[in-house]
Length: 534
Image (cartoon, rainbow, N blue to C red; front, side, top):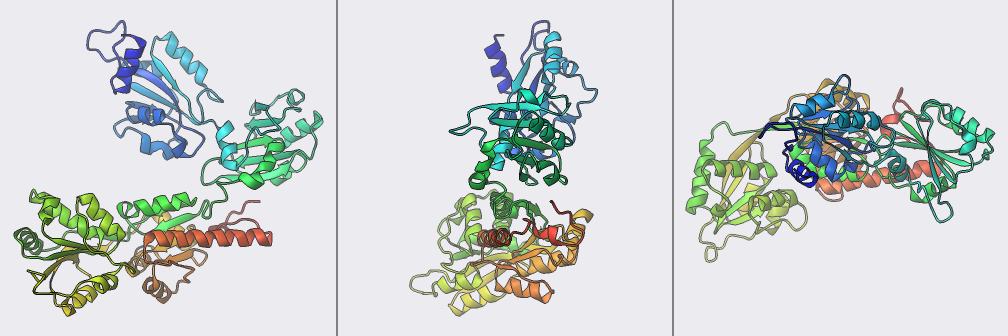
């Protein structure tokens, strides 16, 4: 098999047969995979593909968590200690040996490759984004500009560096400085580098824990006493670009831990939006959706829907769409069963769930996305235009009467059917409960009055330093009834508007701290006993 054929076979998920194996015998291989300096979204397409197909993933336990979403669920995930890559590959396994950053820079790649070559095991090297370029990029520091074209990379972890050989480099990127920043600075100044040379030290680079200290060679040791590892040091005039190019740490909710009291399915788009603002969303469901106790009502409703009993079907939540869709699937039906029916949706998210199902809504509120908003745009019943005057409302067991009352007043007859039940979810794990009550969250988003009541019921009342954001006036009133201070109120009743309102609040808060000359601190860092960065 040619090298190209071997690679093609591996790309298709099949390890090639090698010389010395019997026909049909599966020969494994080893891929040395770089996953970047910390941000899981910096994983390359090639790395994600290999991690998704590997039989064995060899990775240090402290490196693994952010990247598990890319791992093959069926793979064995093991630490590197005592693992023989050659033996695993010879047993027919496709092995991914994972490195942070780039495998060829600051990693023990050469010895592993030499062992594979000696054992005649095929291997592949998958480059990753290196911390040398990735961390300064996330800190807003270009390593070269129009005036500075030279970059020198130094690994200071083992010490013993001859700084006189590097003191005059335009830009220095120094790795392994976690415990030796003072020694490095002294060495460079002793070698002739000016004590006013700009430097930047970035810890936890490309993650939402990233923190950068701007300083000079003379002051950097004292300015970084409380900085966490791993850390990277950039020395040179290019550091001055941070004032204009810092983009990651200046996001409005950078590093904020935000509690989203919704299920992962409901919170997907909201969490993505929060991440775009730099936040770290934590999804905690406050309700559990369960089937109705008596399914016969839904069975009759679906039969009536198919046989032409209804003129309209109204969906007031994504849960209602899911409940009807699941019932359809049980009966072998699909979206074609809605032919000839008019369909209404209470808001954009519900409409999106319908479109995914294959149904385009005929009616939605123009303004307020609520039952009241839907009634405002609902047409009155006209016996000459509407052959049927009946409306199906598949809803939760605790739905309000507003919609039924409004449609009845307009002349329609409503079948209000329990499509699902909502019950309070089980309490979240103890660390989450402690973070809620102890101020470990920077903000909580409340998307309904029930989320307020249920969250406090299962986890306790949020700490007073936590920013409380509510989707609308009714939710805010409920929060205040429970003694919470409402800091943020969405301009319109949608989760997207709520996230945007929180981002605006965070941006204004940050600007006020900068203007006052105060340290940039998240809300959780304002509570007594919280760790504060220097």
